[in-house]
Image 1 (cartoon, each protein chain N blue to C red):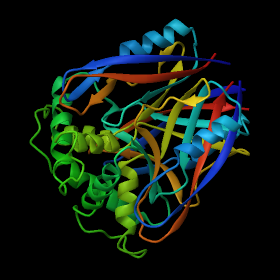
Image 2 (cartoon, rainbow over the protein chains, first blue to last red):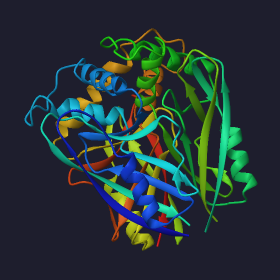
Image 3 (cartoon, each protein chain N blue to C red):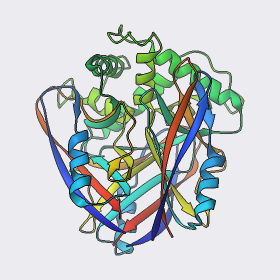
Image 4 (tube, rainbow over the protein chains, first blue to last red):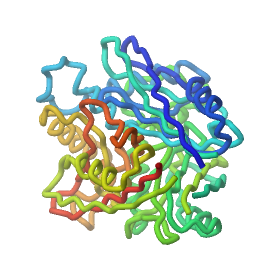
Length: 138
Length: 138
Length: 138
């Protein structure tokens, strides 16, 4: 049994889903771990992770619109010093996921046919986001 | 340290929670790994995972109603080609979990007294859902 | 490759976020595992886990207010026997996370600059909450 680490950088240009399935698969292939577990962890509190349909881009737009609506539908915020998009970003992060664990079998991620791994950007300004990946297996 | 894999199939008959705690425990027992970590991963984007109370069935009904209400309370959807229950299913998936990691100690899952592991089905039609499980330990 | 376990107890005094980053780091240090993966798992269905900003305490208050609002904005509940704060607690748990996996590198959790690990208490009465932790690595 062995393990490997990689930190992925995702450049974002405003709110929405940014797929990194290919880069996660590339990391698994490069480490030559045939069977194991990949854990992805986002190192931010205003961006998160989500696994969603990678077929129709409208799914991603609808998700973006839903979370934009939901995070601004509640009571007024105290924390506004970093801009009006900051507190809704924390809420959208809390509602989705900070880490996701994906089994690896025969050199491939055990994703379903329509599953893609996305960084979910919640802030308006461009950002460089980091996803820390851990792989254990053999 | 060793690892094991198993893919569980859960047959669903419409939206709601389907418990598979027993099957997860059975997998752990069959692999004779006394201490380690079990990761459950759902291979779909319109069904998800949730750990919830397994005592009063009303909790599961209330959860189902709440998520049905929430996922249809936002802006109108673009993605409607797969039916009116499709986009709300993606949203309900994004709001809950795609993977859950559970420590295993002395041959048992470290679940609390009232915790059950559920597949959360979001679509109206019957489906066969797959949960990929990874176990590492010794 | 080796593994270690620890169960952390968090005493809560009503709804809100209770940070345990220090205790998680202390566990990692004490086990002398330099590189690996830490998994935190909450053993309850009315408390959950969330990674959020640890700088401005207003972020935590706004999160608490948002989830309090959201979980009581839907249809009426059937499950009320354990008090009016019980079913909203299950919903708030389902909306956040039961387990979080965090890579460990060079003896430290791979957290971003502003990330803290929190137990999110959802019930009104004081509770003693348990977080089961699993560490694998070398």
